Length: 176
Image (cartoon, rainbow, N blue to C red; front, top):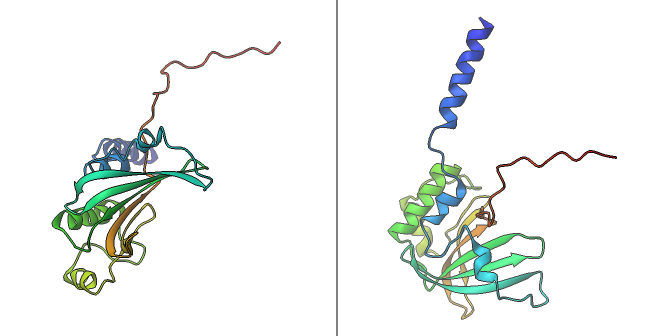
């Protein structure tokens, strides 16, 4: 009986391992015109300015029908973040799709909300909307011109490896 249970467990594990479960990199990448899976490429010629990070601002292609620029930061400890800044406060259908997709993949946000509802549109009108997960945040903030706008942040999104690891195992070194 124990062998049958172990066999069922092995079958279940193999079935779930082969199921579609996209990585965070593929989740976010399809929404943005910049390569969020390779943020370092935008920071190649940017120098540190004495802060705990170096930063570059990159124009976007009206991502999610809302965001016109991306602020990419690389912190001294290696973390990479990107914030997408809009030029207005609006709940576009593509932004709703992004938020709902985050909910489906990541679960309820930190405050317990799920998919976008009618109340969320009212919160936008009241200038009081936000959704936050551990690695994603959609909120409102004042830009450099002190205008309230939508902001979407990805905190340390998975990055593509610049060099793939070798398939060969390293040779064992004998101690003398």
